[in-house]
Length: 618
Image (cartoon, rainbow, N blue to C red):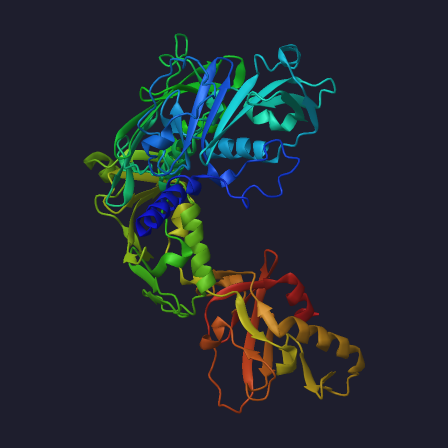
């Protein structure tokens, strides 16, 4: 008795492990009443066989290798007898490693998971809109089911489902379909047939290269770029390559997709089109592009190595055929604002240096009039340099270096840069400046870059370039007194209890000046320059005998509601903690769009807007 019970238990265990675990559960097929395929569980589909127009595609879900008892067709199910077309072997660049599904026939290659998912969705949600019983051979022929437009066989767990799509129904909105050899036919929506209405090659991956395409060299008709020490270099001309453009080339290769697969043959134009791209990634690969793809005017024939011939969109090839100049890195420098850790420039006998957080900067020259450096102005200047592009490239041989003054450079720009957690400092050597342009050499690059003549001014040592345009930044409540000394008279205004009044002088009427005082306070509490023009005044600036001297008094920081010192506060006299802060503005001659001016104690000359000058001189 115990032996019998043991044998029964062992048999039950074998049944569960070897059979039942491969069958569909009631939970997996619940709520499918009215569906075309009632015994359907999408996650349990392991194989799909599609036959259409004399072609067959076999798709297999990538799972563990099935055992022998699971791999054969079930009994009494007709196996399609369709010859596989002669199709080229897939390129080694094509891999199924990242795909859920693999194409096993007509060639072994990665499947297009999106196309497979669309096909499964169509079958999963297909509805039996009509059911026709008692279908015989005559009806099968009339419904187009004797020679189906497409046949799909699905392996779901250990069951097979045979779906045959026939002709359209009289409404044109549905299509006849049958399941195996049942004496029934159905009408389902045309959308269920759509994924199977095209060539079976649609189930083959459209990606021509794997996502792991990691290249260190690439060649186009316009040149070769190689990756060395983390930088891309061109072979001809020998110079830095545009990293962005080379990476765009590689991305375009990686993203290139086939619109369709075609049979090989003659007259594909591979020998005459002239477009060929090769890359080392790390295996050497070659893409050839041919002529227009038959009747598809927007597509071109293409082939990777000796792989299948495909059609690709012409627009996707544009990035793979750059102009030679596009591949050259023609920038004066490539430092991004967030990478910059320091800047120093030396030219002639002068130099200037700056670091983020350094609001002064320091200028070393015979003229020590430099003042505060505005970080935004420094970054703006570096941005202008970064935007510059060379107009000419020459090899850095002895002749060109001597011709362009780079054998012994007259200056250099060094930018301390951090990239990827490492120092990647930039050094730019400055050569001769002529009416034809200014010569630049980036470190020891074997090329001389000639930039437009105006770049010479951007590379000159001038601390004024970096000064903040904000002279001071106070709220109006901090301003308590304004005195304007003109050529013949002095006007004074004071604020008491929030009200501005003119200070009477020689019994003059002050009522008409109250509005002017408010306007002056509004204009002068926050004052900005239009531009800086000189480190020291000349006779042309008219500041030897100012047209007006404006004295402003502000409440001490302890008394004002807000007190925001601008970068120029360091240039003004430091007052006692509780004493009023005083600023003296001198106005000179008229300038373009304003009037020359300077702050007392600071020799730099700037221009204030005409609208501000007019209120002061009124």
